[in-house]
Length: 272
Image (cartoon, rainbow, N blue to C red; front, top):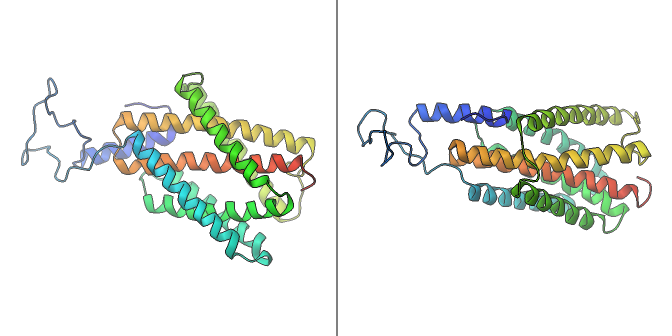
């Protein structure tokens, strides 16, 4: 099964290897399917240990909720336990570890639930610490950003459901290119900021507001890629554990959107 999503292409290749090694989603061993001979235990090609099943949309929903729960608990723990004197050092460390884990998960050819859960824990700590900084400066801003984040998510889900926005091959390629470009810009800006260099992208200036708006639009549209990833994964019959990878994509977009909304709202409440 072909897909325009590069991540799903890699996952599809992994699924093909698993099927060649003996796994097949339910119904793919000829049970009543026209033109396909039935397979029985002991015959060549019959799975040695049939998997529990292929991933489904329900699997992804459950995994996404679970990851958000883990992220929320980790965020709350970091907010309460990390002393103010270590706040900035801790969130910079969590940000770096989160980026590394995210890249490993994104470019890995296997689905690793343990890595995805580890990412949720680390990213939760990062989100909690950053949120504490903003909430201390602008009371009530965290609740505003959370409500806005999930509001955008549900709007995008509805637009995708009614096919108002479709993940065509050109859309996917364009989004991947834009997201890669934004990631590179933000990474460079982050490194420069560590050395005290102000690029103007995150200081509340008109340029910073415009950059945040671009990031918010792209982060919102990235949900379309996640929804397409889930749709393709189910159609391709990926093993159930790949639902963790799909859920990871949704959580990454939610965190990115939340942080950009948090920053944008702060621009209109005073200086950073």
